[in-house]
Image (cartoon, rainbow, N blue to C red; front, side, top):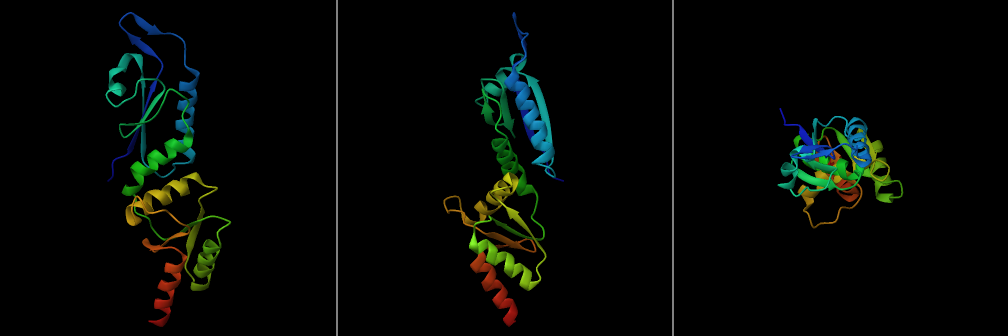
Length: 190
């Protein structure tokens, strides 16, 4: 069993000594809503736990991680946003980066985009070879983009540019369109 990804929000609220926050923070409320919606819609299937704390009552906890300006959002104890309403793409990327290594890819997948001729060729190769796979448009689907990057970077290296398509067959990384074509040619001659 894998550990859930921890999302922690410190809201502008609470008290410390003689100080008490009585005015709710609009950006904190917006950030809370973005977290809940993002977990429900963009991150479905990834095990996530959400924790919320009043910043003023716990100011030293996020400060030790570099967070000092509410709303403060941490993913697995790493500050990903502070001082402004949360960007859901930042949250999606951080949670996928933290959690995707715990979830092996299963089946066959092409990560591509609509304007990519190599992606079209890979889809056609899947069809003609009878490979039952799923196509992910990384331009239209934020989760697909960040999942592809989180899965491929450990394989190709952090400094190697990611090209499209990126392909997995039966849970095994293949590479791009040329690599898929070469792999299918070997299988055809076997």
